[in-house]
Image 1: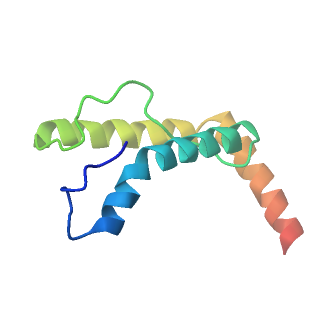
Image 2 (image 1 turned 30 degrees about the vertical axis):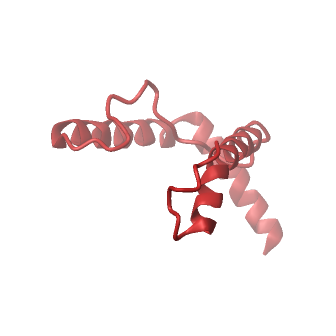
Image 3 (image 1 turned 90 degrees about the horizontal axis):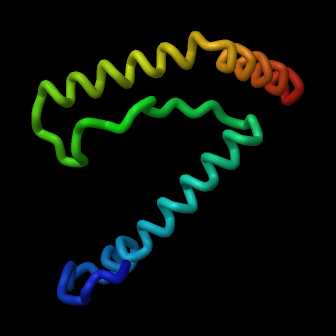
Length: 97
């Protein structure tokens, strides 16, 4: 996504970086998905679409989102998948040390 030259005119490097941000973001998502498939990371993500926008100001919505995220993380960390992942990580860290 190219940002017009009149935007951030005094900051051309920022404009250049922002122009490539979507591609960088997509590469990062691909990396996370690949590492998750390889079993190198455990990803905690929302179980359903978020009900708050990117610049949400409604405190009730933000509190609900926080509570949902906390519950989601707790559920993942109590799962068999997380226990298995943590066990594999501790085995690997023993080999490194």
